[in-house]
Figure 1 (cartoon, rainbow, N blue to C red):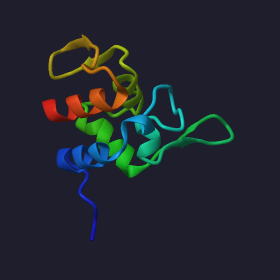
Figure 2: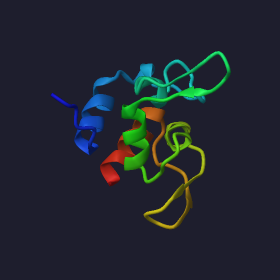
Figure 3: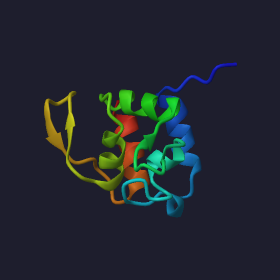
Figure 4: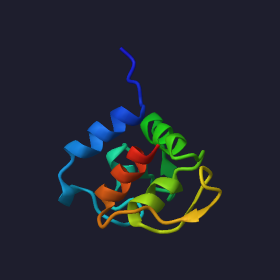
Length: 103
């Protein structure tokens, strides 16, 4: 059976991850991208996953960096509001979940 990567899937996924297991940092071993299976290969390039692509798409982007920008609390362009914003929340987990719940 094919996995459906929708809002509910990601909310359940990130709610189940302990707070201390989602950290800051671009592809830090505990960032949201890593939890979606993304890693960097020996040439310093993203090795993407379908899961990560689907999460980026939910966040309104075709590019994976939107995930780490929301995760880390840095500015990103939100097409829903048409400007750069910072995801709300005190921790990476809160920011990811708040963004998902706002969709």
